[in-house]
Length: 630
Image 1 (tube, rainbow, N blue to C red):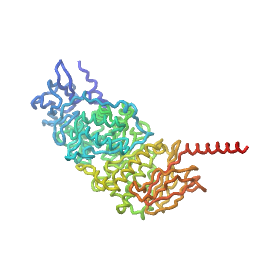
Image 2 (cartoon, rainbow, N blue to C red):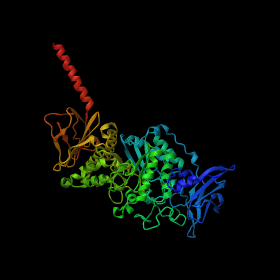
Image 3 (tube, rainbow, N blue to C red):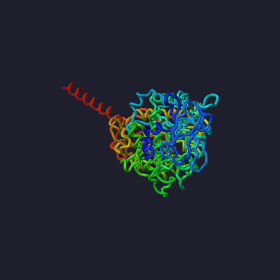
Image 4 (cartoon, rainbow, N blue to C red):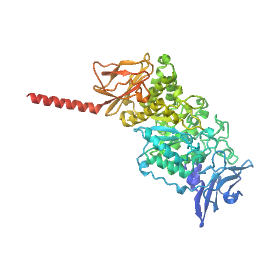
């Protein structure tokens, strides 16, 4: 007798391994090879399979549970063949649908699902996966990527996943990024949606290859020490008639009320329905289990917390329960996977707080930081003193969540201008300010995320049909920004004070937070063995000898100056280590004097252990001198 206990779990919203039971799976039944199909269609009157294997004549599936579970076996169905689910819905209309659990669909607006053999997926990455964790006390620098437009082949065609890995990985290693985050790569029909209106939550998008291509992509990344994060879109789905909408004539996946449609014209998932929860949590499990994905970034969390993303509409308790359950299952089953929220709301405990009060994410995008910071850098320096707190404000709330600092794709599209073009001023000033901005992002506590093209200071907005304009690297200014970006990643990863317990406030303090008249900021971050000082001059004023308070006596090495000529600056840097002297200022015990360039950012490092060792050596030498005199 068949065991259908899994179906009870699916209906209760507690079947994370749903992909093992639903969809189309290659198998042998009664000595015959073929594919087993299983479909959930609670209000359907009939469910059939049509495809290449039966000349597109319906093969009826058997209803094995009155609650809407259908299954059947088709002998001689083969990998690569096309198929659809043929449904007589409760509205008495026949519909031909893609399989919600298909593991591959046709590309773009083509409407069929495709049979695959999941048993062929093999990923050789045990060493990487065994050592990964959620990186709370490690540097994380994420390169956000649109798969089709990072680079193109010489004939203009797009790389497959595996081919892209061979182009992308050397670049990520050269630039010292730790992770790549892919904009959605689950099957979606419309290029202009960038993947954020998808249909196939288990199907690797066929624009760029198949399941084996993607598995090889992940394998190559992991073998080179690079993690992979996927964008996940649990709020809404595309309205194409061959997809999830009115799947069996009823609202299987969407709301059946005024919340059916989203503000984007797509359909909202009804996340209060337990089968929908199993469906979406199952998608996460599928990619984590089969493809060894290292993290998920949930899109548009504010639209989960509140109906239509509007706090005035009230909290969506069913959707909130879904998020808690999703994070709970993934953390329990894959403890080393990072869960991230793209959330613009002020909802408390997205990442912190106990399970009952928190949403359970590991990290939250700090969209407030992104918006305030970019507005500040766009202003004429004359007016910056009036908005001085736009830079300091982020630290007033930073420790309420585990934040990621994003400069993401959302900020370089739809006539918003590229990051470089958002900067105030003429050509040279824009480049000086964008170098300052990136230094500030890396100096600020929080993990880092940058969209492709940021690191070369592209003048052009991103478009989903154009590759990143790497040709700008023929010009020195762009080369300089790229080199700065690489050096920031290296400094970040090699200085413990820039990531050690960065969500603990004891390791950060302002040295200069209220100098609005000069628009100069300074703060320090510490670990056990070093203290880093970060100074930012937000105006064109140049200071030959700027006095700054510092907490420890001894030497301070200038490890980064954004005005160096190699970065495209005017070479106004300090060079030799700076020694403390005289009385302290800025509520610090000691002070140094440094050269502070126009629109410049400076990183200083004081090595605590080295300084203590130097003192011990001096004491020993002093004792030796005394002994000689005696």
